[in-house]
Image (tube, rainbow, N blue to C red):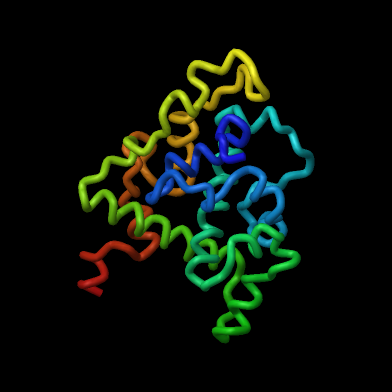
Length: 198
């Protein structure tokens, strides 16, 4: 069930999240059920389900992973439940509920930017502590390198390093190192030096 050879986006989260190896961050199946594209303007829309496309590193697939990670941070930050989030924003309208609870009038995109800020801050903490993001890349064996010769996942492999680098690119981190880009840090108001001078 949690094998990235079955759901490659699991592998992206296993390998790219600042707290790696957890299936509770996101996967392709979660993304399909959440329907984020109905409220988040940049979340890739799913109009047909093509399982084979999940195995091909692409901007669309990794942007889905970024959306899932940002949404998970919104869920966690609001004290919500992943299972409720998976039921779909049409059933669990967290963005509207947050506005009602806080008196804010934020869009879904603005809440997702808060999620991106949280995810980036977590990555910045790891880097400050000397952790190299690429060390979280899952082992070749679980990525299907080499692929299995028999069983339901026969021949399946995940190009995990390419997928990680595309995830980093779309969340605003350096494609080669996984470190948040300076412009991302500034745009998310996480530049501590700049904050002190303002």
